[in-house]
Length: 361
Image (tube, rainbow, N blue to C red; front, side):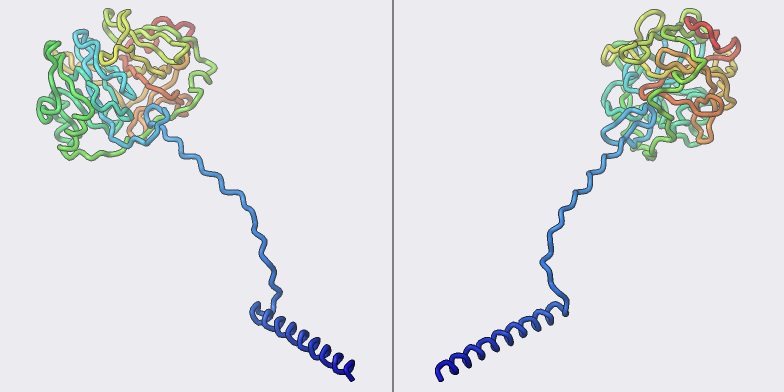
């Protein structure tokens, strides 16, 4: 009897266990929507690589910059008369143009855009001319000068050009040095010139256009390039000669005038450039003062100097308004660095202005 009772109790307990288990399964099925639940396994994933920051390069030098410089270029008309040398601030310019003024004296147009040397002295500053306006205009630059020819003023005023003239509209943004005689003692700096441009309401437009740069440069790739590690350049006067010597270590050309290093008075450093261009075009004398017109539209012959070599090419006025250089219809590549451009008359042929380079091909 006792055994029967014991079996009965065990049976009841087993039945209750089964019912309980079934109930839990039903609850589990209700909670999971009837699907079998599994414990998720954490997946390991490789983090996405951090993208490299974009490489920022100056539009007129091709040199790498930490931050993009969007300021509008400023073109300064710099005196190159012997009494004005050595000039100040030229080593900070991205591009320097050398072109004839009156009497066989050249004037420099210094294009400043990427430098952060805003308080460095620039000058001596001299007057403007229509073809100098044309050069500055090709960069969309604000012009800095002291006076202008009659034709120059007509262009500046009638065409609403952005200009800061020490004589007529921007005197407070210039100063005169006591260590030189006028007119070879007028100076300014980029801080003052940008303040003057803002005061006059000139828009701070981004740079117009950009040059084409490459690590090799076009001269090295030209099968007809010739060696040009040291040469001299004349414009019209025999007693004014510019010389360039290639520095193999620095990969640039060192500039001298009449056998003496052409230095920046601010830092006593010799002026250097990575790219040199000599281009010829028509010059016409306009009056008894020797004022000139210089053709910057028709195109013509040019020579590019890079890496101790010289290669012939052509200059063109491109659709964007900039003066550019091409070979066989393709724009040449400049090497990253500063560029000096020289404009000579085309009467006697381009290579006649250059000595020290032989076997032109």
